[in-house]
Amino acid sequence: MRLKLLLLLAICMLAPPVLAWHAQGIVYCDENGNGYFDSEDTPLEGVKVIVVADDGEVFRGTTEDDGTYYISVRDTRDCYTVWIDPSTLPVNAIILEPVGSFTRFCLKGKTSWVNTDFIIDCDGETELGCWLTGGGVKFIKDPRMRNMGESGPAHTWGGNVYPSCDPDPSDGGNWNHVAHHDDLHFKATFIEVVRCGNVAGIDPGSESPVTPFNFIEFEGTGTLKGIGGNKVDHGTVYFFARAQDHNEPGSKGAKDGADVDRYFLHVFSDPDDPVGSTLLLCDEDGDASTVDPKMITGGNMQLHISSCDNPPE
Image (cartoon, rainbow, N blue to C red; front, side, top):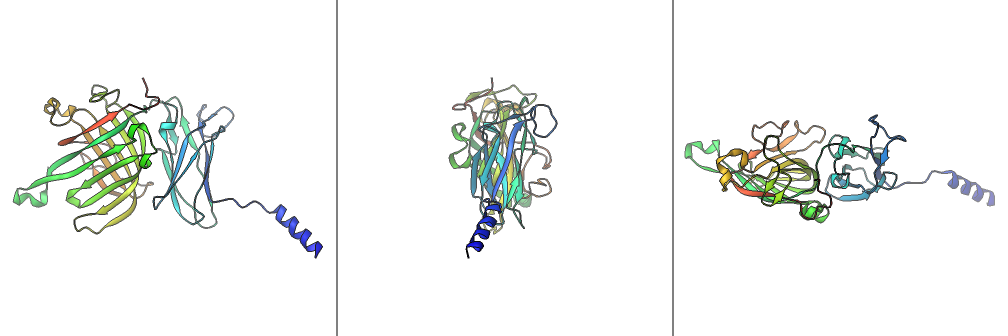
């Protein structure tokens, strides 16, 4: 009996440890541009990494001093999206890999973990440090009611993104969009700011309130459901949006289209094929592969920099 116990103890000591199901990786500045981590690169400490399950449950972590992160998830076969919070990167950083600030993975079969490294260009030109409030409306005549001469709002939207420059409340804010002609309601459940910047060919900044930027781009996950008798439910969806803050339509700038607020939204089901899986699009030319915001016909969207720790000069 004693021999059996000794053998059992030896086997247990040799067996590999059982690790919880998790996502892991490293976030670093690619100093030499070779696309992989080596002794010349700089690991980034304190970067927030968020993992979102397809059903909306959120798991969070922060990189250590060696740039690594380890985030436990559910011990089940599920699919997730792992995000990096751009606001916790150096001010001028651009995410090189994965393209954008997120990537999707599934734990299935014998796989209980995934490794996702984020490669950063820490000397890029992306400007961060703003947040968004307000909303708007786009009126357009409904071709299905042309004979009746009726018109109405095609899209209405609004809420807040990163209120007070803080990504934590309500997982990045509260943003809703209703596509009236399609009887669809989009609600963002997780929001990340991609960047803040200025539209080429337009005077930089905005005046109400005064900020050094005139656009914000943000992305994340949400839900897309039918309204007004439409029973469709697309479950968890992905989105990318841009809001441009120039002047509200009722201001003196309304005589010049370049000076009126603009808005773009693309909602899709497959992050590996956003254009091919388009579910909802608010865009000037109807092409999901390009960002062409619509000029709003009512409302007001406002960019802010108050409470932002490091708005660029």
